[in-house]
Length: 233
Length: 265
Ligand SMILES: Nc1ncnc2c1ncn2[C@@H]1O[C@H](COP(=O)(O)OP(=O)(O)O)[C@@H](O)[C@H]1O
Ligand SMILES: [Mg+2]
Image 1 (cartoon, each protein chain N blue to C red):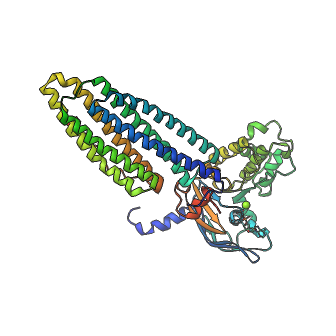
Image 2: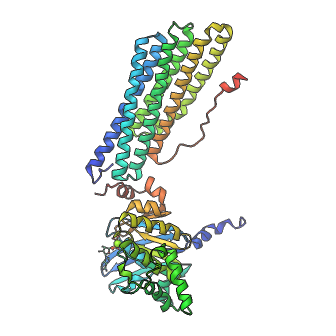
Image 3: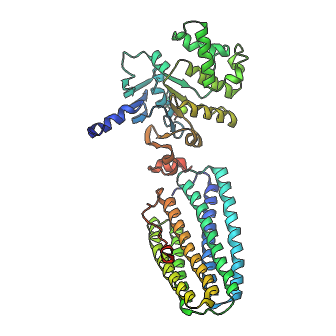
């Protein structure tokens, strides 16, 4: 796209996109570290992850201030306006992603014992891999301004949801078989739920990217079905 | 009426207050407006935006035949208001300008009292039978222009003694006084400070309940704030026209995109 007549405006927008990319990279590491800490019961890594989240919060605030300044100074229009609205939403989703990862890390410290079931840990790990690949893809779609790639990410969120549902069922059976495992399983369940929520944030980001690039909203056809509600009954 | 779907298009067209087709404007050899087609909705605000010299004012002036007053100016094409051709020889331009009022960039009250500024038009057009009727017109016009409270105690003072923003609202009141259906405004706020601008914008928003308003503005934020539809002109061509929200968030044409985002090179 052609440059703005006012050069500083271009620089401000580039800087904003750069910050989002930085936040995205950091969010990925935070999520990945929190789950590694969980499956390996690495308390130091868990503590480091909790600290890492503070940097995400900081970046989020910087981005928000940057956005307020650009709006006040430039009154963005058209694609610039969409770009800025998207940056605000995306940084919000990344900040929440960091919070959810931090929550996983805190649970690692709360569990503070070896996991009774390696199989469950592998399930959470697998779910995380998928979520992380979603997050990575959507952040790439953001930097590449790639709407179809963003649409694809949203489509694939179903897979994350499906794994969550099966993990949920499995955890239930564990808890019924051995009530002593309930505390640990409950923590694991929350961890899995957090990862699933991170997948939802990746989906939100996909929608923001799609809107930013095309000016259109992704249709509403993708319905969120939480089957865990049915199982409880 | 579902049984006649094939006339929908026609029905839609007669719904517009102003309908321009293939309008050309020449100043001598200069072709200032080229092939402009536009439909303007009744009781709503349409804004014309575009770089200066693109022909916004020229096209706006076509809508009440103000261009007739410029010797070198020639207008071709068709402009219908309420399905009536305003360039038909039978149309009286003075009557037309009562129906299609105009507010200019610089507030231009007459060097008369506030009262007479408003009464002037109704007097010419014989709209008031007596003094009471005229008082009524003056009062209601000032009220509708949101100026009444500020001037009711000094109606005999000169209009030129008001602040810039008040003068502009006085000019709007003057335009309203002759019961127009359409009000054309050419950069009505460009000489006003932000507060006075906000008051005029607020007024425009109220007026659209009863009038069809077309406003030329160089401020895209103003267009975004006050209008329901926006038309973007460039080099005498109507590049794009549509719901204001679409024009400012997701314009179709690259030229519009470049202009509204400040990338005009
Ligand atoms: N009275 C006039 N005589 C000759 N040329 C004119 C006259 N008014 C406008 N023009 C020309 O017509 C073009 C459009 O002008 P105008 O309608 O004033 O543009 P805008 O309102 O978008 O700034 C410009 O090139 C301008 O020089
Ligand atoms: Mg002009």
